[in-house]
Image (tube, rainbow, N blue to C red; front, side, top):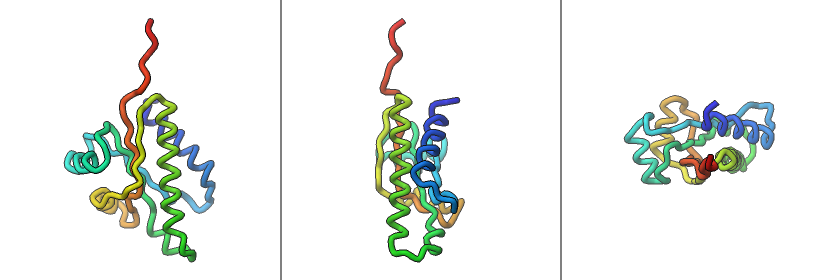
Length: 137
């Protein structure tokens, strides 16, 4: 299993333990790499940071219409941040460098909405190169 898959699997497990909702996930994650869309990646890297992988954490805003509380959007932001920081911790534990950014990006939201009109980009996690080196032989 590659490192990115391990980070994503551990993140999903941490997130589901934190938010054990029977109604289903309200968070969606898109993995953006250089091979995805060069123009979007360049824009994201100018906004956030230059990294080999950017995890775009998006919320299902369509589900907010079903909520009767005024704090529904705030709750969605908390879930996105929870997912993002779980990914950050999982990446660090795997020996990667990582950074979190709690700022939405309009172009990322538009790309996500091309696939699902209810998605909105809320949080980004940048994953970098390993911070540990192998011990000498």
